[in-house]
Image (cartoon, rainbow, N blue to C red):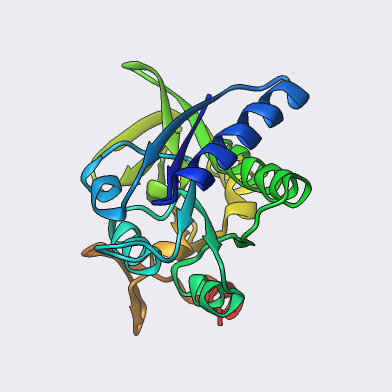
Length: 234
């Protein structure tokens, strides 16, 4: 079940968005858990993770853009849809990785299209997990949290910033599974999450304080993959 926050000071629009969400649930045989906040300060004080956030831009105490900037410091996963009277303000929403915006008065057809897109984004986000068969049992790991994968003998070790998971398996199989998530080999025994590379100095890739050797045979391929990855985000 997706958790949805409505952050809106106008009671009329609180009710409108709730009504539209209820209508969408009935039309699409789905279910949401919805919470309403009348200002951004109360929303930020609530530490609940919300999959989708409908965020008004013009509010007292703190506007929606400022609230989104504060939210993004610790939360990059929620999908934000701004609500505003003026499109010129909403354009600034892309600075905080907002998915889209709705212009008041909000019509259901446009609302339902943007909501469907947000749901697809969250569904894709939830699929970015691996189930690892460890000695402690089956453990679900977020692919985005993996720094690198290391192979040794007949085992692979998944390293995150918090834990290490040991799984019996083949680096070849792991590399094929993670290729679409922007992982690349820097030598025959290490597979690196390109999004986690802080810097490359000489023959070393730096990830969260760890330095991994880049072999001569893999260096060009690895650096090309790294350049292509960050080229996608220019």
